[in-house]
Image 1 (cartoon, rainbow, N blue to C red):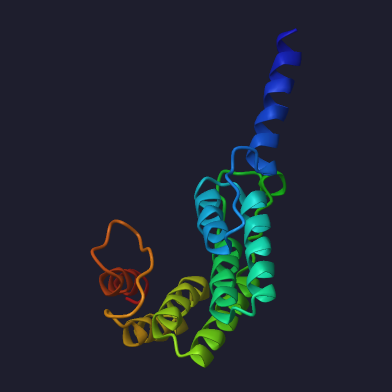
Image 2 (spheres, rainbow, N blue to C red):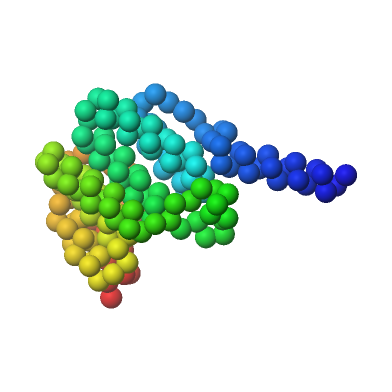
Length: 176
C-alpha cells in the first residue's frame, strides 16, 4: 500500500513539474516570456519551452522583430540552462550550448537591425555566458559598450545595482 502511494505521489509530482500545471498562462507574448523565465528558474523546462514557442509565434504573427529577438534570448537561456540535480529527460531540459549560442546570435542580429542597443547588450551578455571560452570576454565588453543607461530597462539579477555592474562582475569571474 505504501509503495502504491509513493508511486502515485511521484507521478503527480512529475506531471506537475513538467506539464505546466500551476504555470500561469496569458495571451500577452511579453508575459509569456516572463512566465517562461520564472518556470526555468523553478526547473520547469517543458512549460518554459512551450511558453517561449507560443510567444515567438505571436510575435511573428504581429511582425514584431524585437519581440522575436526577446524570444530568441529566452531560448538561448533555456538551452544554456544545465539542470544539475534534475533528470534531464523528465524535466525536458535542453542543455545545448551550440543552440544557445545560435539563439543569442540571432537575437543580437535582430536587435542590431532594429537599432536596439540594450537588446544587443542583453544578447552579448547571454552569448558571453554561453561561450565559456576566452571569446566570452569580448562579448562582456560589447555588452557594456552597447548598454544605454537611458534606454529601455530590462530585469537583471537582483544582487547587482545595474546592468554594467552585473556584466563587470561576470567578466571579473570568468575572464581572469
